[in-house]
Length: 598
Image 1 (cartoon, rainbow, N blue to C red):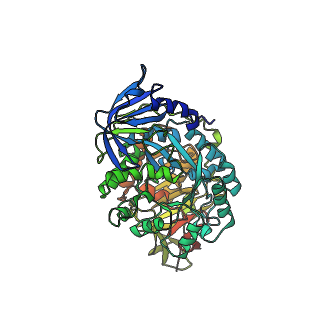
Image 2 (image 1 turned 90 degrees about the vertical axis):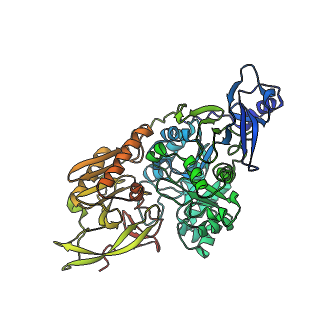
Image 3 (image 1 turned 120 degrees about the horizontal axis):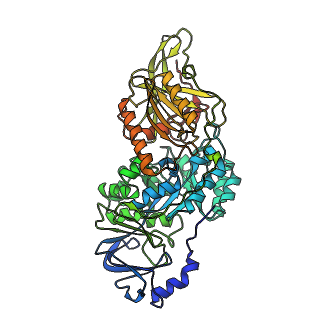
């Protein structure tokens, strides 16, 4: 059930006016702080903030006229008062947590608004799954705005999902109370080629007066990019270099630059602001995405802002990129993103603008966190059984299911191999010479085997290929039902029997991540909801995730946050080479390609 009881501005207008004028008492006054004004990019010492009904009524040097007998006083003690931080693009499911537990994890880091695209669960449970995410989001003490997923499947004809999203689904969702716009339009070739369904989804969003999210994962900035922009997407987060950020901003898009658990794309793009001097109001900071270990140990949007500052960005500009820029982009400048009258009272107290310690967090006028501790209740949705029984495999697998036959008589082959690139979402299309034993192509050296196991319709399908970059050694395998975006099951390993063990373990469990070596289970993260999320506390999931990543290192992997690389190997909308349940995909041409070249 939707439970968003936060009053709208019309509900609160009379109270706000009366408190600002001194005719009625404020609920809360934050006294004696440095007002960080993101509208004017300045800091103003010795200011107060008066709050009523969860919104800001007054900001000025003295809010004494707003004080009543029962007004709560919070002493800022000269600290900076900054707006609550906004994450402009992310997927809650990638944190392996439900919206409630994700909120509980990020609130102490000062994140009070999130713009989330639940296209992960859309691929598994369709529109019903999106509604479940939307409803739990609205139950939280912070603002979680939902973008209706646009692409399930992300690339029609290249993969098979559990459910498909239609233009009619998009039109229906635009009427839901928490829907802020359309999620990232990943089918960029479809938009550039005027695909009727993609344009219909965009049109339904624009008719509703809402924002269309972008995803242009191609280095081609020529006519194809121009056609994509003309199709309606208003932002993009897939840039990896300064030229990408510049091109997007010049064409009227917001450039979203991300620092997640595995993607480090801020440093290479923020130079468009720090060195090239372009208008910073067209750039937005986001995560896309952080797993639970990052959230618990390193932070969320506070981590991104600190990183931007470390990359040479002025602290006030970095704060704009994580507050007012985001709010303006989504049409919410009068609602969130600044400490000014009428806005939701989302305020952080911090003693330093550069290191950004998050000392007190206020959301909607209530203290929700202090000194790293969440003090607010984050209610859970009652997830039904159909959301917990989503791993559908016809039978247990055996080692032979992972065999890759060689051409008759061959002693060796040339194979297409997916090349993992550390800290980036794109992969490389590589070729390796691989040996043949008893008619089967063998993974060897730096090349491992990868398989995509169908898990939505119990077809029994297994697609096999090769991947390099993980550096695994010995007899091991890792399996995950988090397999962006179609979310079948990705299995990577050096031994077919270990791969079967890992796949079968997740089949019996109902979803998660598991690592086997020499027949022994090294690590396990249970993800019972859609095979994507846990409703356990973030610290528990983070501990299991850390153990999983340590197990990857124990098996020889030295990549930074290699799990994120693993989970994206089936994302058939990011170049160059990916695997799907239908085969090996060359994303440069959006065509299937053979595993064995010769």
